[in-house]
Image (cartoon, rainbow, N blue to C red):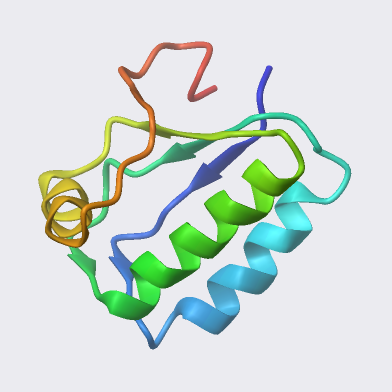
Length: 97
């Protein structure tokens, strides 16, 4: 099973430092592709998007990928405005277990 990061409802400048540390801890020892459960995001700003972009670039540099699971409309709208995309998958019992 792929590692899973569950995004909180708010991915903004107020949460970025704590989220970064949490994600790095979650991803330690999981060098494979990773799922990001983004269904609960109701608030995202430039700092939150920047953190996601940095995470994606870091994975890509090591030959791995991030994949969004059922991203919220709020997140996809923000990503579209920035011209940024990640592969998106529909949730399954296996992907969000």
